[in-house]
Amino acid sequence: MDSENVIEMLHITKEFPGIIANDDITLQLRRGEIHALLGENGAGKSTLMSVLFGLYQPEKGEIRKNGQTVRINDPNDATALGIGMVHQHFKLIEVFTVLDNIILGAETTKAGFLQKKEARAKVEALSQRYGLKVDLDARVEDITVGMQQRVEILKMLYRDNEILIFDEPTAVLTPQEIDELMATMKEFAKEGKSILFISHKLNEIMEVSDRVTVLRKGRYIGTVDTKDTDKQSLSDMMVGRSVQLEVHKEPAQPRQAVLSLRDFCVPSKAHKRNAVNHVSFDVRAGEILCIAGIDGNGQTELVYGLTGLEKCSGGTATLCGEDISHASIRHRGKNLSHIPEDRHKHGLVLDFTLEQNLVLQRYQEKRFQAKGFINRGAVREYAGQLIAQYDVRSGQGPVTAARSMSGGNQQKAIIARELDREKPLIVAVQPTRGLDVGAIEYIHSQLVAERDKGRAVLLVSLELDEVMNLSDRILVMYEGEIVGEFDPKQTSVQELGLYMAGAKRMERSGKEEKGA
Image 1 (spheres, rainbow, N blue to C red):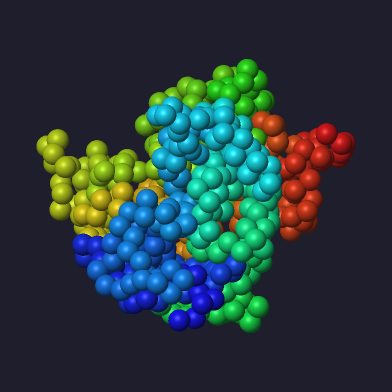
Image 2 (cartoon, rainbow, N blue to C red):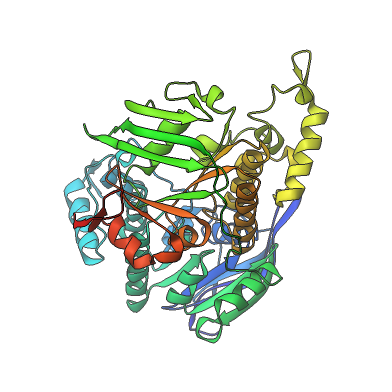
C-alpha cells in the first residue's frame, strides 16, 4: 500500500431518496498536502466529506487510513482516528461560551469534575501558536461569523486532529479573514497535517492547494496538480462547458431614484452607538449600486432597517415616492425583493418543501388560491417553472424539504423566488455566497438583465471581485457611515481596501480626502 496516502476513500457510493449524491468516487489524500475538492452546487462534495466524518454511511466503498481499512460509524469514530471537520453551517451552541463550545464532548475531568483551567491553558496556547485570536468567555451568539469559524478550527486542534476537513470555509469571511485562514492552512500543512478543502473560489484553490479533485453531478471527473492547471480549465472541468469568468454588460442608463435614504439611522444591538449613522444615498432605476465594506460595519443593519427586520431610529427611507421608514415588512414587500444574507434565518422555512418556499410571499395572490384554500396544482406548476429556469437541483423536485438541499441550491431557490417577483427594487445581500462559477455567471447575468429592464439593484457584497465586476457605482461603508463613492472603472481593489479599513475617507462631494 502506498504509504504517502494518509486517507483513501475507494469507490464510495451514497444515495438519498431520488438522488445518487456520490457515484463510485475515489479520493486519495497525501500526508501534509492541501487537497481541494471542487464541484458545482449539489455535486456531492459535502456529502463525501460527511461520509469521511461519519455523519453518513455509504452504500458501497471503503475508507482506509494509513493503508488500513477503517469503519467510521459516527463523528466520535472520526475524532478517534484524528479526523476533524469545520462545517459550512457551523455546529456551535449559541448560548455557550467560546471555551465551552471548544471543549464540549472532549472535556478534561478529574474525579468527575471539569478541569476548565487545564482546558483554557491548552486552548490559549493553540490560539497563540496559530494566531487564532478569540475571546474565550464571550458567548457564541455575540461574536462575528469569522470569529465563530476560528472557534470551529480551535475545536479541531483541541482534539489533536491530524486530518482537517474545511467545508466552504471562506463563504462567510471578509477578504482579510480569508488571507489569515489561507496562511493558517499553509502552516498546518507545513507541520504535517493533511487538509481537505471544499471551495468554489478558484482564486483560493490556485493559491493554497497542492492538488484538486473535481466532482460533477456526483461523479469523479479527475484529479490535477494545481501548478499544472489554471482557473479557466478548472471551471470548464467543474461545469462541463466553457464559463465566462467576467461579467459582460452595457454601460448603465440610470433614471429616476427608486430608493432614497436621508440621514437614515439604525441602532446597534452590541453597543450604544448607531450601527447605521446618518446615511444618505439614492438607488436609481437602471443601475446596480453596491455597498462594499468589511463585515460588521453596518451593512447588515442597513439592510435590516430598509427591509423592516429592524426598526430605524432616525431619518427617512423613501421607496417609489412613499415613506416606508415605519411600514410593515409585508407593505414594503409590495415594491421590494430581498435576497437575505442569512439564507437559513431569513430566506427559507427549512422544514417547508421547496414549492412552499417558492410561494412564501405570493400564496395570497389569486392565481395560487381559491376561496381561501391554496391551489396546490398552481403552486406545483409555478415551482416547476422556477426550478427549471434557475437549475435548482434537489432529490425530489418541488416536494423536497428545503433543509435537505445543498447550500448552493437553497441560495438558487431564494434568488429564483425574489427575482421572479419583479419588484422595482432588488436588495441583494451576498447573492452568490456559496455558489459555483456556473451559477455565479447565471445569477450575475440575471441581475444585469433586471437592471436593464429598469429595476434598481442594491447589492451588498464582501466579494471584491463581485463588487468590481457587477456594480455601476460603489459606496464604501465604514463604522456605520458612507466614507467614499467610486466608479468601478476608475478605482482599484487596493484603493477600495484603504477606505474599507478606515485608512481613508472622502467627503461626499468627492473633493476632499483625509486620513481617518
